[in-house]
Structures are given as structure tokens and as C-alpha cells.
Image 1 (cartoon, rainbow, N blue to C red):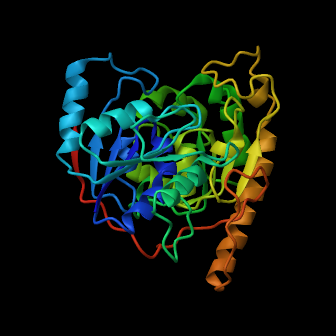
Image 2 (cartoon, one colour; image 1 turned 60 degrees about the horizontal axis):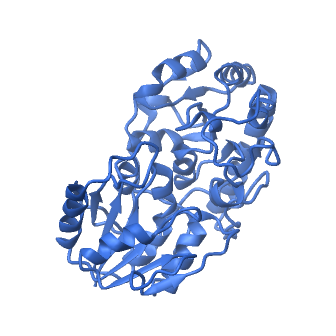
Length: 381
């Protein structure tokens, strides 16, 4: 059986699809991941993926391309070349899977499963209704199981990526604190000034601080790092960033892709979480977690890209000292779980997205069944 899993949006969304991908890989002979250009780097890091296809769908993303017949036809031909028998369409609760299902049906895939609140006609063979309170990773797993792909025994369902490269040459010995100040939209960012103050406060508290960001954020990371932190802005590939995060005692970041990458390498997370989307669905999954930010703020649930409330109170009322305290809590919990794991005690996985000081979870082990390495082959439209 040849299977396709589609998740067309962002880097973090694709990471959250990882447990479902492993469930499919445990029972399929070959797994193709269809994702967009922003999600493709994450797709190449997922265990269980044999090939990555990249398609910039005209209905997805912050700046989608124009809708054009040629582009859709090229995508249909590319997908048809995989000769897949079955497909899962993964999408967020606010998204419809039906446009993607139509393209997959046009590509000849005979069995398609998705969560859908709308009548799908002949587009879906398995129409699942997701739990509206489920974490995104759990919702994807529930769909996979309904479609006949339960997690194999020995797989705990946490996020996971292929082993990243070592990061000591970039970041120094493990045990530092990572602060990632950027995010794809302004509503999810703590202010640069407070981020810079937090770096200084963490350094004064005795922590080595590493500041990370994408190339477009170099000016931001340089400012935030100042003289107290190590600026790695624009200096890491996604795999190298995973290595840096894996060496962290704690990672401080907003609700953005690196938060999920930190969870995928088992790093404790201090999440400066803007409630424009619900934390129960999008918080870092099953790792030691401290959630900061006013989750009942007026912007809650708005999906706003720019904060609609003057002063950005949901995040900018968090102080640098709040972050220092949260880092110490998260790092201590991560250390306790590492010690427990070394002692051979089995920890119980916490519910993803739990708003607690220490959601249960720890450093990732290798899952049994379905953790096949990616070939690195990919197609593009």
C-alpha cells in the first residue's frame, strides 16, 4: 500500500502531523508527504517519510499564489506520479480539507480520509469529526486511527524528528537557555525590548543565553542578544536549529514553529503564548511546559495577525523576571524527568496542550515500528 499524508501549511503544523505520519508509515509500504514550501523543511525531518512533495496551494498560507489552472494541473500530475492508494488530509479545525481532497481525487487516489464538518459528497471515503478540544497532534492521530492507521506498539505519540546534528560548535556545551523572539505574525511576538531585557535578566541569573531566528530576523536577534547573549540569528538550518534546541535546558519562544521543534527534541519550553489561537490545541506537545501570557485577553480566539488590543497586553504584561522564574521551573522539571528516564522509570504522557507548569514528557527515545529514515527525495511544483 502506498499512502500520502497532506499537510499544506506551516513548519509547526507539519511537525504536529509527525505522530500521524508514523502511524501511517507503520502499515504502509511507502509514505509520501505533501506539504507547502514553509512546511517542507519540517517534512524532511519527520521519521516515516519516504518522499516529500512540495506544492504551494493557492488557498493556504499568509501569502498564497494566485489560483491558476496550470498550477493545479501540475500538482495533480505530480501527485498522480506517486500512484498512492490512500491519503489522509490533515488540516486545522478552522480549515476545510475539501479543496485538497478534490485535487487528490483528480490525481487518482481512491481512498481519502479527513476531518470535515461540511458534507463532502464523493470527495471523502472516511469523514471524521474531530474533538473540538483536542490538541492538533491528537486530532491528527485520531483521524489516522479512524482511517485504519493506529499508532504501533511502543510509539508514545509524541513529536519527533530525525536525530539532529550536534550543536556544540554553534552554541557551546548543552545546558544553555534558548530565546527565540520571532514569529510569523506580530500578534504572536513578545516585544523586542522585553526580549532583550529577558536575555540580560537570564544572564544575570547565571544562564548562558542563545538567541535564535531565521535570516530575515537578524536585526531582531542581534538587538535581543545584545552583549549578554549569543546571537545565532540566520546561522542555523532547520536541522541545526533542532540540534541547538536539543541542547537547551529550556527554550523561551512564542506560539510558533520553533516551539514545536523544541517539543520534537524533548526540550522544556517556556511558551509566551498569545491566545489568538487556543493553547489547548496549539501549545507545545507533551514536554515540560510553562505557559505565560493572559489566555483570557480580549484577543483570544480571534486568529488576529496584528494585535487588535492597544499595548499588546496578552504578552507584554509578562515581565523578564516572570521568564527567569519560568525558565528555572521548566528546566528543573526537565532535569527531573531526565533523571527518571535514566533510572528506567516509565513516565506517563501528559495530555498535549495542558496549561500546566510541567506537562509530563521528556527527551525523546526512538519509537518502535515505522521510524524509517527519509530518502531526501522530493518533488516540487
